Amino acid sequence: MRNFLTSAQVLESFIDRIKEVNPVLNCVVADRFNEARKEARTADDLVNSGLFSTEKLAAEKTLSRGAIYHQGLYSHQR
Picture 1 (cartoon, rainbow, N blue to C red):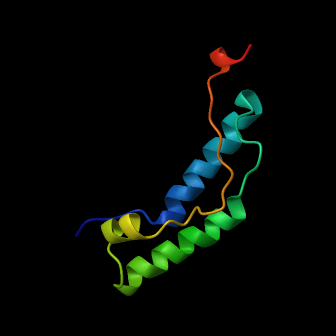
Picture 2 (tube, rainbow, N blue to C red):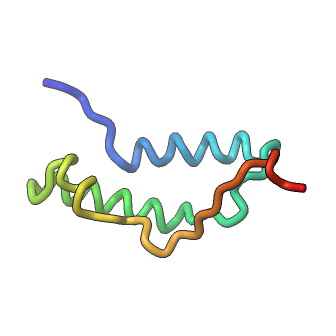
């Protein structure tokens, strides 16, 4: 039997890393960690219920709706 990481476990790893590097990089200006934790639990519940496979969940559910997102390259700033 294969062992899988849950969405919540993966999320916590990302949050820990963001908290570690963000003081240096200053790249996350508006975190939504609490909302993301709720969404990760929802995703895990859907997969555990058998209603969704991980593949179907990724294809059909967007759990980051309303999140602020912006990207750019520092080298493009003048």
